[in-house]
Length: 290
Length: 247
Image (tube, rainbow over all chains, first blue to last red; front, side, top):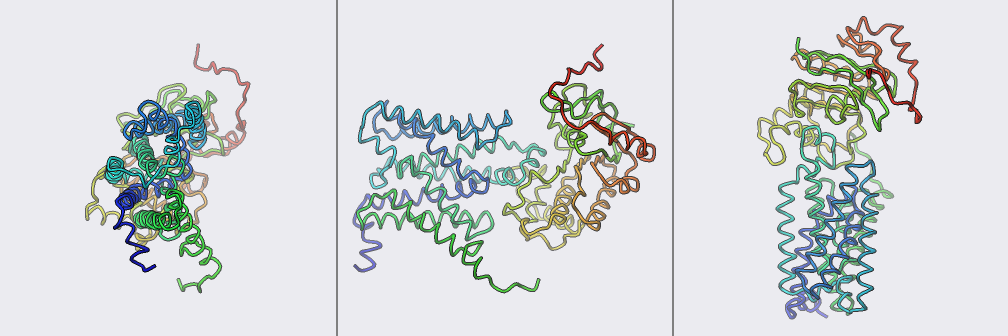
């Protein structure tokens, strides 16, 4: 097979492959910075918790309106947001830490979701909620995913400074009256929005994959916030592109193929990344003069 | 003389248990006060009460027109993530928060002020370094540079010189004395009594209960320090409700 047929032709030939690729690009642009900020805020697992929290809302939306993009997205968004707000509230007004309150509320939400899904029979369409189908992304979903990516970038441009200070020195932000709580909730809203965008393509189970794997892999390549975001988005898009090709040529399901490629990039980064990777650790170069 | 903070029978604490018990007095505007006492004597709690982060359980604490943004507060280092990927310069520039807020751009003049502040704390040329590469002492200098930019009339310092070498603490003490010369109100929690005697006109000795408060020479006396050391540690779950001041 020549390189053109292997790397480019599938996208030229099939509209669904092109739409999937654009969806991956939009997801990468939006989720890249959100994932990096989650990692920097030591909230890597919060993304995971919220992705489970989206389930009952999406399932309820499906029950009410069938496979309707708008209703399912809205349901998922509301369910994720409720979990985020309740967890944040408990963490701020009681001594309990946020990771603990998140664990509690996402489990409640997940159980509700499973309850709804299982009492309403084994509808094959429900598989769509859990596993997504990036190859079935239609124009409406694509528009939603791209809008969310755009909104994410705009919102991050507005709250970026507050967000960084809130992670690095929350006491200072409090002392100067910098509205840390508002910034935090806007950020959690962005996380939920991006997970909703991701679940159309990758399903609620794996939506978080394209958010977190590139972000944690990027930590081995870049140090400061801006390069981290760039690296994370680049890794996410490269994983999307390679994963789509892999699923096309090897007839594999696309969602797991994409996330597994991202996982492969992570493993390579752990081994070969110049910032703290195993290679740099075990093959140290000679020390400098000062 | 006006007071920056006036306390009337203030009790501060957690979960109804007092950490600062029935404190009355005032911090005069422009005063330089050391707060001295054993561990667990309520020094940090007092500072949190003064900043407004902790509401008094009882009594009245007046800030006499000070807004939250007029008070610069240097906590003990615990809350800051020193592995965060941010440069020294960006950290110091945060001192301009009142001017730049969430969105404002940093002007060239503000950047120059930040460079001057770094020079003043002995970190000339460190601007581009990530904070993760700094030692504890260097990082404390960065926080002082940030406070220089904050330019607040009131400055609260919680053990600013603990675990820092003599030269660094001497340099930073010079900054504190400079602030005093500019008429700012400074309250610092300290452990080095010689340092207090030499540099701080006023002292509050506290051991949950106030022990002595006034001119340093009158307050840092053996009998008061001994009394402070006798403080009962800890927190009695079965403690009675305090009736003091309730006729």
